[in-house]
Image 1 (cartoon, helix red, strand yellow):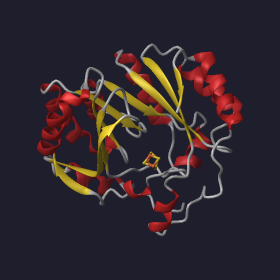
Image 2: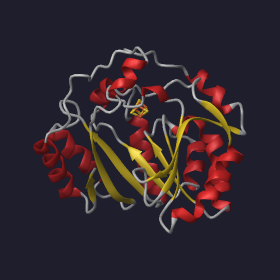
Image 3: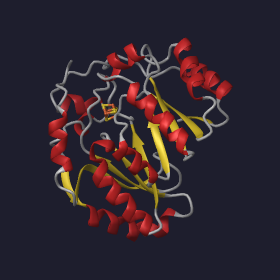
Image 4: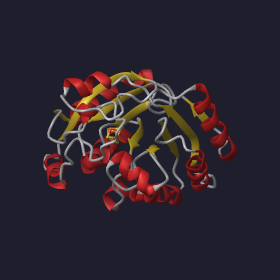
Length: 260
Ligand code: SF4
């Protein structure tokens, strides 16, 4: 392991202060994380350790800045006219579910203001608090990083069990989700697993979009800045052939597949 996994106790630092969210950064007019124009709040802290993580500076659960939830709601309200009919607020990360109780407060407040809510998660947790948060989440963007648990473990440091269970839970609620898949040469581009991934979700009624996100190296410098060894520094971005192969497989199983 190239970076120590932090324990769940550390994450409780975040849970203990109910009025503040621990965030990494904010994007005011985001168009990549959910529909329409969105205020994207990138929270701090993640328990996955994806080999390809392009935001290693969001991993430390003790890092980032504490920002009052009130301030985040006020920002969203000020920006509301730009959201149009599809936009709203997305919380991404890091991993948002580590701050689930505070996000519940945030999302309830946003709904009171008539603002659409979207959660971008790796599905690390699946419990009653998360389910309550999902009730107030208009759209879940769920990253299912690999269908094979052994490879998922090697790729992220943890099992895919919770993620798959959370996908099934979301499906049972009938509420919308998009599935996301990062395409990494040599790690997530195996044909048989792409088929298995797609077969797992093809009958889901709540999945109205699947996004293939080609691996890139834009975060390379962050690993160096943090003095961390980057395991995929030699990994190329996926070729056109690899991207088209993945797209072709997913297209067999889903109506709306977007290659980003
Ligand atoms: S889940 Fe996201 S933030 Fe966490 S390690 Fe993986 S890529 Fe990085």
